[in-house]
Image 1 (cartoon, one colour):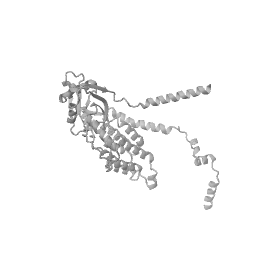
Image 2: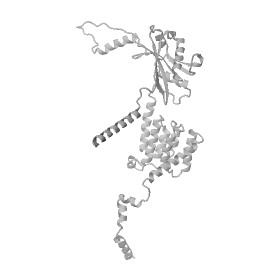
Image 3: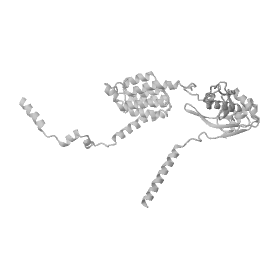
Image 4: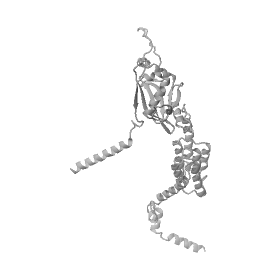
Length: 404
């Protein structure tokens, strides 16, 4: 028996191997000879999975586009792929694309639900080498993109999300490092603003305008008033007017010299989180008090040696009244407003309301310096088109020169 087994072993080792099979096993360049699939098969399968993932949300979108239907679509996928979680990475990317459509891109609970799509305990590294070499890189990069999507929309993760990341990728993963950096920096940025904006903005435009003017007004005695143009018979636009003015600004209007005009400038853009508003400013020329104070402070800045020399005559000191916060370098701010239509007619109605508490305005000429809030912005797309056209012209000129 021993001799028979020895003969069989010798026959196996002495049998010449096929050169084709050896080439396939040793050279990866010839692997495509045994692969009869389409070279773009992987991309096609990925597109099919993404299309299949978006179908979950398209079906739920027929009912409603809110948080409830979005979570129902994610739960439906979890019920269907409860064991293997096939295509969960593509489904996560598809859900991130659909979040804004369902108005859940600023909801933390929805991000936690998407994070549940990753399988638990299977993606954890088993050694320090695997942890440093980004074990399961596709899944980790997908989770990092999820955290970046949260950061772009101003959503700060909580402790529960950190525990979920530990259960999925472990505490040594690159995803958890990204989570730690977010938990360190984002709360600092959130509480750094001394004038915080409410997390959930009101839906009423009047309340939003009051919030915007309260943030822009630097005077603590600032008063915000709300008017409706329906009370004015001469008003052409039926809208609201939110005005901001303090007692100091009323005194500045009273002290305006006769014949001096004031200007209504705007519109300027201000933002409350993701909502923008157009506001207008009632301004006058720089006051004499502000000019005198600027001249004195300018002299002090220019004179480097402020101490008195015993061998020289003592220089006379100068005193000046410090101007108010409304008396700026480019002019004096007398009032601010936000209207519902941002039209010239609504601004004329605003001036009529201001004349009630500022009688001097009725004898003051007013100049409207209005412009579109989009003026002055560069259109980079048009510049790129012009550059491309110029490059084409240069190429055509070179061709004509070479042909000639």
